[in-house]
Length: 471
Image (cartoon, rainbow, N blue to C red; front, side, top):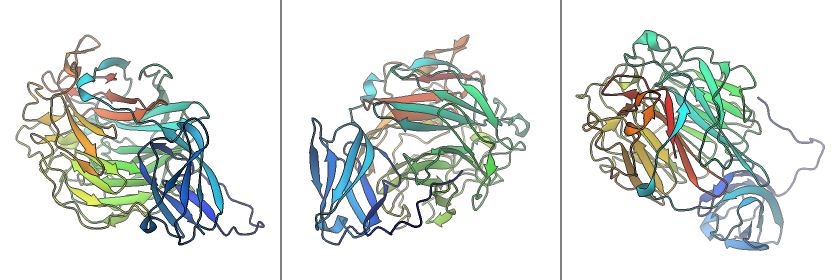
């Protein structure tokens, strides 16, 4: 992993755009708030320029408080042209700077019309899989690739069942309505990991000009949480270099709640090496050389939690569900385990990505405590699918949906959708109530939201589900 350097003999510029939404060439959605970083913008506000639908440009005025000499905060206009388009700023002094961004439309997603379809079999482990997505924009294309790392083999989830070192890559089929190509085996992780978390850093979501897959924390082959961070260069179809260790987490964590936003990774909670949920919050930024710029300890959660999920917006991070009791590897299947209905929340700086204050205990987001589910962040809608909850035995609420307005997540209600994964076939039998599946979501070039759910354990039969489903 490396970065591109400039010509040191060139005169230093007096005005420059360094990063847009924490990246070199970000993928942004109409209506999305973001920050432009650089220097020499001047203290008097100017305008931000977007390519307009139909040609020409549209000016997006910026409030006085959102324009400084180093930072400009603005929003993608609804009339901004979609695709790989020109973008820039004009200072109050009349100086113009241009750059390239990728703009996607923002179509509505209606949870009531959600229809699950089989996406074939998955060749790897069936639980505790770390899934990540990367998108590679072209002039008129948007290539989407999925990466899976590690995992465990239920039903026992005993320490010796954690055998996942394999990493797979699959492409989303262009024009295939969310269909997935063949999962191709690539490099092995240096050691087995399950219930880790993974992200892909690219020039389109970070300060790194390369492309790298990061696998963080997780359980080792003995079922003990680890602090390791492994990274390898990737392409849209492969892992092109061996995994190497990077800056480790401050403490071992498995089943952490993790998200990436504008080049910064957040790891929230998770269990320690004894299976005890924690309230710790760590954040690290993917640097220009592909390394993590250090893991910084942030204000702790309002309470401990693990095996839940998190949602990040421009100015706020939320937690959803999880367990608060000590649990066996993977979270266990004990109906008596205390599971969370609330969602903690804290504000973050849109510039630094650090938290600007402590966490507050939010309202009851879930109708009943839930853990070990998949979460799909679809911008204005968030879905939770599967997992352990009071009604899991009868699968009474397989998929729930919540509405997101600005930086606020509403209560989850449901069930939603036209069908259930539980009733779809996985090889020769129905999928059943899935506990511990992995989920990932992405946007197509026209803005359509897609999602994929992989693996899990059928709670009723204790059978492994080496299949995938999506929409």
